[in-house]
Length: 427
Image 1 (spheres, one colour):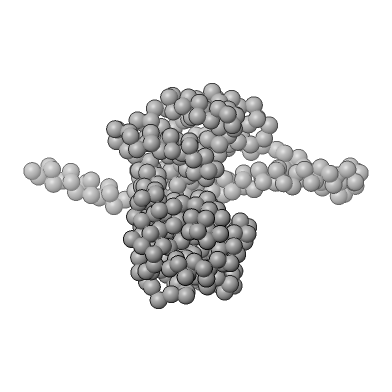
Image 2 (cartoon, helix red, strand yellow; image 1 turned 90 degrees about the vertical axis):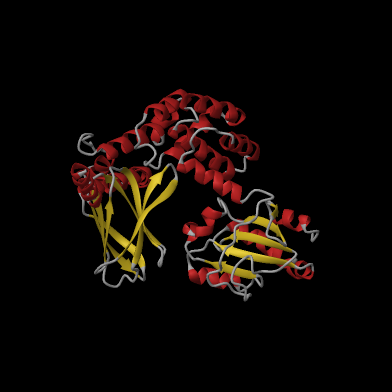
């Protein structure tokens, strides 16, 4: 018994010691107190923990080994900082202007190197072509011509990365350059991408490359062979495995985003019928879709600061039917569609139909200015795509519509405002 107690004490002590820490230093005028740390699984941010600042410093202790993309999110100001972990301590400072994060300074070696590589990559894509054209107007022996030539050589140069010292940076840049960037990516075959998915280590899930790689993979197979391409990939990866389920989850989301309904239905059905243990990533996708199927009870949402109502939540709004519209003041399609809904607002109100707008805005001034024209119930968390309801209601695009009956059951999911009005006999 004594040995068991000693061993238990050792395990407890180890649990208290983090594998690495993430330290974020904010300026004194940055008002946020709470911050959340996320890791990445495919394209989904996964919350790890939240911390309160101490003297404008947030210190997150991560208890396990992790190499990949991470994010710290400040919900009060809707700011975020993305960075990488190579299972070593991370140190970041930043400046803030009017509450918005500016001039992020990565103090640790890995993030400093990764930031430098990404800046150079952006310059290659954007600045390099412009400098090549400008150089044509200056002779090589002039001071400015020499300066341009020097900058072109610097930008076009490659940055070598020691794979033993920086394994994630090496993994990310080597594979991003091969599969997703430049001329090389145009020559990659489906078989090569399948092999990459099948043989890569766990850094793939945390790399942010999964979804773009899948889109590239589907594009190489052509629009007429999408199902065949998916079946070929899943046959190799096996949907019973964590990697196969992660890919299946991402594909379901991709088909949702691109409104490929038949394909989404096919592979969502495949996922729902699995008899094996379901991973957290796939479980999230299944739950998000189940929340918003026709016939499901629409999950309730407690309003934050709703206007044009005294109701405290969606369920408190009493009507024969409710139209829920997810929108944004920066969405061009919303600019086209919502005025058509406005034209029929009084006619809908006479039918005891209530409209509830949930905005994915992040700019308060833009949001408040826009809703002055909308007499229906409006609410927003002002967190953009970080809004909680974007996950709960599986929202991938704006505008998105749901029609509920008096008991908050989903009875229709129209694609466009015309479909909304036709369903409600208000065209």
